[in-house]
Length: 312
Image 1 (tube, helix red, strand yellow):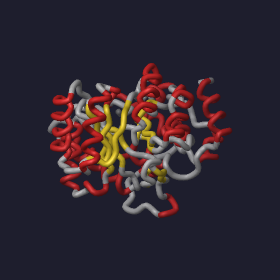
Image 2: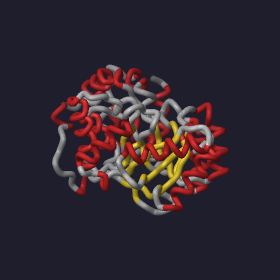
Image 3: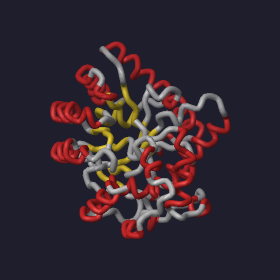
Image 4: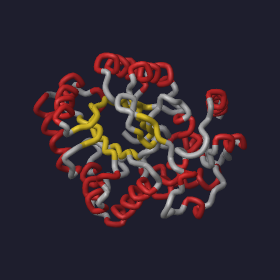
């Protein structure tokens, strides 16, 4: 589950220019990231493995057909994700060609070992689920998938049983469940309590704060890693701040753009393991990664951010 569509690009371009006051030159690709600016990592509770706190989602933005210019751009996005210290790539069979594109790009880049691949199964019944799962291995060109999730709580019991078996076989490292709509918080909470998966993927943003009370406490209590999708509300949050400059106090937690402001609010919650904003542009990948560096807002600052946002 990812958070933007191709239609939002002009909006974010204007936000980066006018809201953050940064130039294109300030976010050009770099060849080396110093330890002083290394992206932060957080532990997966059930294993202790450290995961970079900013990754990428691929819904819509990695469904690119045969356009070679688009392929080069997505390769640049992944290269900068890795060079910037990120690893998490989230995808799904329902994202059209995204799994195939990722599989081919990682093979071309010889970068499979640099990636933490998360995908999903969205199926009804045992056989349909197994067929879809095996096809994901084929399209992603890998014999091991880091995280396999039940998409949108679809036939959760059956699909989790299959995934748990594959985990025991060593073909899957972690299992999870997902949903993105606040209206499904109670169903997702019940599934978290029932299955206690390794991961939960959920919607969370300044526009979807019910997650903080409905789901994050359960994840903390059960030791479930949290991946956040739709941190920008599919781009709608950028439209809300079009033409508006960042508040001066955003520098107190090292936010240099509205995108970083939005992401750092989420990452300021210690229960969040990783956030996966989708993007199809290198410059936005770099901007997103910056949110995983520097200072994070403390609880009091997060209250200020939320109050400020609700007044916009």
